[in-house]
Length: 286
Ligand code: PDD
Image (cartoon, rainbow, N blue to C red; front, top):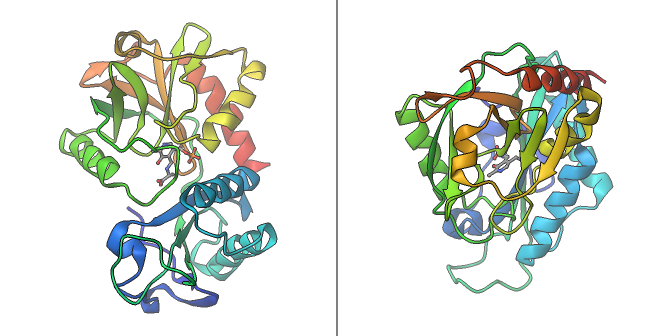
């Protein structure tokens, strides 16, 4: 894990991350009562910023937290994090993290407080250039035991955290989750499978986060000669797939070469991934 870059934003102030402080009564700390976004920035340009801000606004709406900023202010915050951390990330490749909590009340009460300002936090991390020649990763599978509103990008990520750790303990880099015998998503990624020249993803719904990266990848598919279908994916189909991809803002689109220790397809990044990865890499540069 790369160390976060030095300058952060907290409640209207730029400051060294090492000096940022929030109250222990903050509801993010007490209840994980908060939402977040992670935006990839390449060469100083945020990728899919409209989509990330729309999803942030939706997450806030779903939790009944008033959006503390308008669109222009969010964009300025992202630009400010890029600019102020430029000397530590001269290539302009960063992951920007934004978090909004319901704020800090005067005590601990499950019910929403009245008239408490949201806590807004922003920081950045270094991000490597996307590599369309990468060797892929290993994944395990596990039952999806998270709550029933995974479409909200909330900081309540304990389920995801435990499953990611289970993957790490097994020498893998991602955990792909199954609920009632069907694919949901990765612990921090969307999952797609490839059958021949067709990419298949499951429909959005309360069980999964609507991914921004997968939408971009989908828009690239026709020019790569790939068809796209959206339907539920049974476990048996996941295990038979020619290729499995994971997508996220921080990782782009990556091939899973081994699932539960068994090779996916030939056990190396597949031809469909190699085509889409080149197209995705182009997007990170334009
Ligand atoms: N997570 N599903 C889950 C559970 C995720 O945590 C993420 C991304 C995605 C992919 O969404 P997007 O393509 O918009 O990044 C799907 C971020 C990167 C994170 O938690 O760090």
